[in-house]
Structures are given as C-alpha cells and as structure tokens.
Image 1 (cartoon, rainbow, N blue to C red):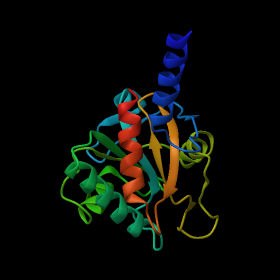
Image 2: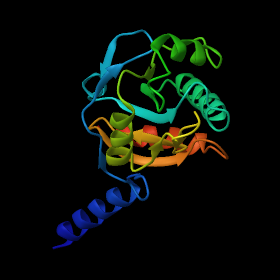
Image 3: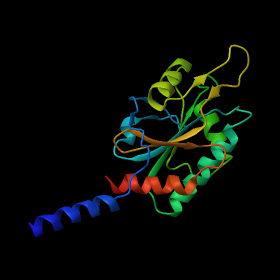
Image 4: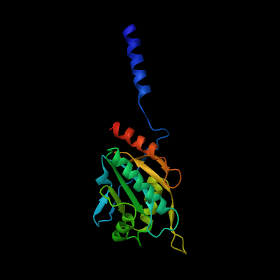
Length: 190
C-alpha cells in the first residue's frame, strides 16, 4: 500500500513539474506548397517534424509589416543565439505583387541570414485568404480600391505535427522570451 502511495505521489509530482503552454490552440495547418524567395517550391512537407513560427506580411505594406518583419528578424536572431532549431515562414498576403525576388529584397532590409526563413508567394489571393482563415484563424482581405491588404498581425508558433500551438503579438510588445520558452517546451515534448 505504502509503495503504491509513493508511486502515485511521484507521478503527480512529475506531472506538476512538466511545462506546458497555456491555452494551446491545436489548430491543424492545411497542406500547402508554394514558392519561396529563392523561387523554389516550399511547403508543409518541408516543415514536417520541425517547429516553426509564421506570420503574414506584404512588401508594399505601409503600416504593420515593416515592424512585424523587424520583430521576426530579431526573434530569428535570438533563437539562433540560443541554439534553437526553428524555421520561420512569412506568407505574402499580396501574391500578385510579391514575386520571389521582391520578397528576397524585402527580407534583406532586415537580415542577411535567410537560411531558415522562408518568405512565400506563388498562390492566388483567395488561396492565401482561405489558408489564413482555416489554419491560422485570421483575416486576409484586399480592398476593392487600394493596395493595402488587411491581415492579421500575429506570430504563430507551429509544432512539428503541423498544428498551431500558440499566437503572439507580432507588432507591439512582442513577447520574445515567452515565444522562445514555448519553442523550447514544444521541442522538448517531441
């Protein structure tokens, strides 16, 4: 009896020590294959088994995209400094304008190291709108008049199983340390 009580106490203690991500989302990301800033196909299959952070941007954005991209570059640099194996994915919300070359030039304004950062295009506006809504629970909508696409401003942590784990502000008060901690938690649970 005593042995059984000690075993149950040990199990409870271990469970309490395990770190988890509060309010985890568990949203599956639909399969996709698009084109990255190098002009090569890149998709969900390339991310299988990897932890990744995603966002939605476009190159002629006049408001939130430049700070979001700067924050993503900073997060990427911080993850590299901590030795974390993580990919970064930025989906263009204006694929009719954002060519691979434009995306590469845009990203180079923020970092010279694009080795694990994939800026994607090569789809229709309706395809990216559908992916954003179904997989990331956010909006992508190009106005009838004008070129400033309305889109979400979050960063999305995606686990190796292809499911969105958590969302974070990508514009103001970006919780860099929290995101890095959550990346570590997801990686340790693989």
